Length: 189
Image 1: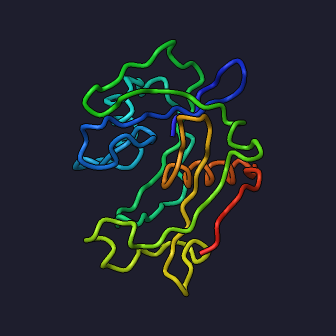
Image 2: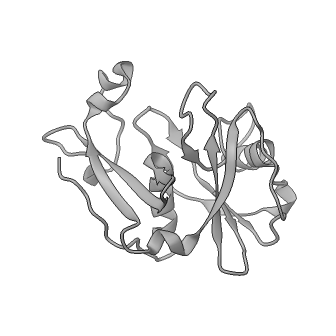
C-alpha cells in the first residue's frame, strides 16, 4: 500500500489491472502478489511494487503491516504499508499486469458520499467458490441468516471505483490512522 508524500497531502498509489489477466482483470488494486520462496510479506511487497510500477525499494520506508485479511476467494493477504517521502515524477508499469497507475488523495476517502457498502450473496462468486463456506471474515461482515457478505466501495471518480479487498484495506488503513470514512449508503441483506 504505497502512501506517497505530495505537496497537496498524502496519496495512495493504485493500479488498474489489465484485461488480459486470468483473475481480477480490470480491477483496481495495490501493487502486490504472491510471496516467492524465502520471502516475507515485506520483501514480497517491495519486489512486487518494483516489478509492477517500477517503485524502487530504496525509496520506500516500510511503516508496517496491517492485520492479515482473509478474503472470500480463500487467500490471506498481508497488507504492507510503505511510505514514499520522495516519489518519482512518473512510475513505469508492467504492461502485462498493469493497465494504468494512478493516485488518490488520502483525504478523498473521507469525503461524504464516497464510501459505501453492499451485501452480496455467495451466489455472486464463481461456482466453485460459491459451493464452499466463506472463510472467517469478521462477524459484522457476514450476515448469519442469509450468508451474505459485506463488500466495500469507494467511488473516488466516476470511472474509478475502489472496491472489494482493496477498499477494505483502505478502510483498515484509515482506521489505523485514526480516521473514519464518512458514512455512506449501504443496502441491507
